[in-house]
Length: 278
Ligand SMILES: [Zn+2]
Image (tube, rainbow, N blue to C red; front, side, top):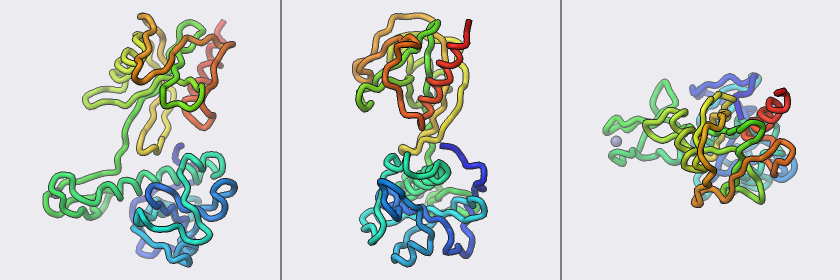
């Protein structure tokens, strides 16, 4: 997920938001869509939601090809009105166009920030919006809270023409993927790569190279993907996190992640690169 080319982001809510605005409305972390959530979900306009008597806290997202877009945060117990359903973002991956999915992911993170930062984390006073930026501040103690963004690294380790792929306990079915983990306080991303690879499978790496990044709103990750080369150590998968990890030859690969994920793009690009090596 990334910012669409024809999207102009802004946090400054206009004095009047037109009824034609696209409204990404969230109830308890789920997106309100019109139409069939399983088949052809439709992002409603603000006018559609107003006609259904749906209202909530508004956050401005910006304009998509000139059309204003807002996030709307409804009470957690608000029922979906007739003709709408509340769908988890993951369930919309293959039914919502990529541009709208990216904006839904952006809206989701802002809605989550809204509903988890209503009170000051320091003194518990109700927070208020801060002028001039997407932030909330405490009127009593001045504490400021921004939408959360948690950096995580993903790394595909290669050894000659083999890929190190692992199956985490939480993965569905028999899927294998690159290693990944959250950056901890005080770490660089490179520190995180060395630590996570050592912790998860017991090997050392070198030659870390940036591949690409992807916003991953589950709930607020920024996934930053790398390749690295094996530098030493015996494979010892960590029992707590990893069900299995192996070196896979290019012609004997396991089930891989879905193509919407940066993991799959990282794996496919690396396979292509290794295949082209003499
Ligand atoms: Zn406070």
